[in-house]
Length: 118
Image 1 (cartoon, rainbow, N blue to C red):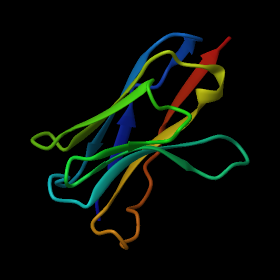
Image 2 (cartoon, rainbow, N blue to C red):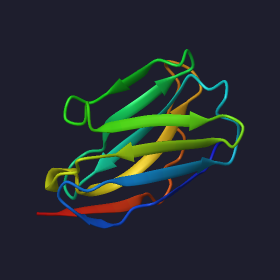
Image 3 (cartoon, rainbow, N blue to C red):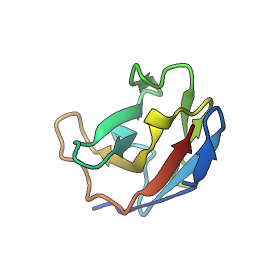
């Protein structure tokens, strides 16, 4: 199993930027997909950005054009650059990965809180 430690969350004003980082305990170089998720109280986690093994990236419609996901395979690190933040981006952000397209997600980390004030 791979463990994740997320960091970088903070409270920012609407329109601001944040950079989140996620360090994995194992290699992410060959894993099928690594992704950022977020969750608000009472709601299920939603995926916001993903990088496939091919290098292809996908984003939730709500963050397209504002969030950018990158990874550093040498450091087993996933980064989420978030620009033009809005109050609806307030959530706990998590990262996770799948070894294969039908594999289960890894255990969840503690996440990092992002709060955007208007």
